Length: 225
Image 1: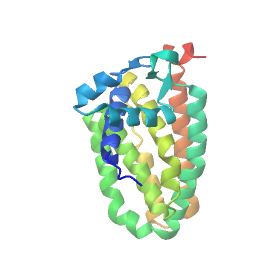
Image 2: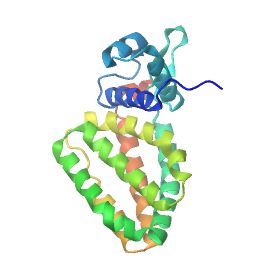
Image 3: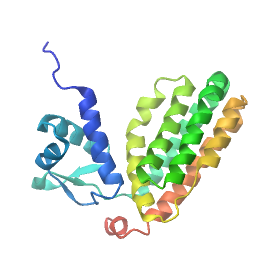
């Protein structure tokens, strides 16, 4: 068996850099992705770029364009709704488990995450707002104590970042969801599993309605149907 020469963290860094370009609106739906240009811009070889592109294609952020390689995938409002339905159920479970088993850990670590999220909103930076939101939800997965939840949600979180970027770039006054996050955390800290689960589900279904309704106003989303 040969040693692995490609550093996985480098592939992840390239993937994150590409995803940020897409979520910030610098790469638009339908825009062609050129490996050589990306490798040159990031100062890396083509190999990690190719691996990162494959990951993003498998996660629905990029799509094949016949003989033209890959393009940024247009957003599908129905697919977004399906993702949020799944997230509501699984994250509801994560919060129920967290409130049952990890209330003390939530109390010690959660407030700093909430505060960072509020600061991200105040900054007006789309990248910071998305990163803070994803960090909070990944924190919930860790609190659950179920090691299968995080990996199962990875693809859906990546696509969620894509959706959030598209909506936040268009929004002059981004929706502040940190009061809802704080209530979810408070239910976990208080050791209230049923309430934590309900608040998580309600939060994600409200987010789904908001995101889907905004997406349906975008020309590129409507043109894809």
